[in-house]
Image (cartoon, rainbow, N blue to C red):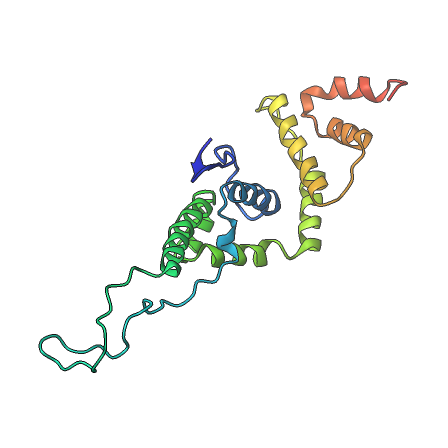
Length: 207
């Protein structure tokens, strides 16, 4: 588990790279990570323009024996304003968040978004592109589940896990699928060598 500052951050080592189709789950997990690391403020913070240090003269006198106003007292050097410290922290955190976002993208998306320096800009563009079209995303998710079929060149248990992920995608889109429907749909997706098993289960008297 990695850490930023004093708070532990959630582990993103097993997070699937963003490919556009898995945006909702990807966004939830990355946001949880940023919140646990106290970095989510980067997506809403608006940095102020660089400010003049407090106490600096806008019209300084030249060095040497320049005349001073009678009664004036020379001002000592003033430390950097607190706002500059805040800005410096924001720039560091923005760099960190941007790196995490880009690191957990597919190569195709990385090529598109690597040119942007603002993590907030990248986050908002991804949200607009992949998080807005609910109807289109739901149709695509249902289509992937309906059209999924197993093959006999891969372990069945591995493909069952893939099928479970498709069902999870449906649930993430608030499309309920009963356990019975999940089961019978899975039977129809088994590879051809499992035909005898399919017939046996289909002809059983119990569900």
